[in-house]
Length: 300
Image (cartoon, rainbow, N blue to C red; front, side):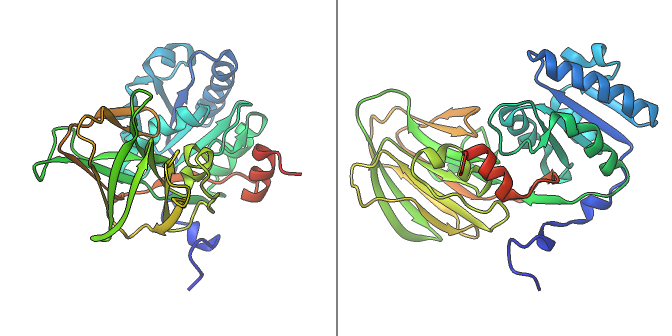
């Protein structure tokens, strides 16, 4: 058996899926994204592949208009033209179907949108021919419990990170963390980031966390501006379930998913975080991870 995180371990039966429909998710305020999407739409239709897109751009692309949650459920492949934020938004909607996602980078700093814009058509051609590989990136599921029962929001999903922090500046949060049903750590800090390997190059990196190879089965815990200097980021197995209890009564805290969805936390709330039941499937580009890191982080 290959070691965890090896290239062979990233391949899945998803790579053999016949692609008969493609959903285009476009950052609609970027003219370049619209232009590339229009070219890809024409090219796909010439190959008798059905094309769908989000409602605000579908008419311009001559594609079937679908709301994003429906698009994520119905197409065989999702092509994202934008940045990591655009990809994160659709990735949380995919769910158990694990529709593969091809991310096309438009020039901004992005670790998830690996394919350069001038490579988009060639990458799509490889996918339609079945000549591609995928990564199955772990997700995180969080549940906010009050009096031992889940709140109405239910289970929420993140690809990058789950963050507990304060809405305003000033007082710190007192957090008590249990890992694998065992007492782990008490933090006094501005908050706590729980990140996947995919999210290790996002907010957790700014908090001093390590860069983690994206296919490893781990999660990163990174306190935000901890009061105690010995409170450093740690890496734990993704099989652990975390429970975070906020001890500060008037904490005014929030729970944020991928920096995009947020929930207010009450004084008696407890946050439970665990590995998600389904992964996010990303189509690999021709660029090795180390090349992407060197490029994005401007390593020598």
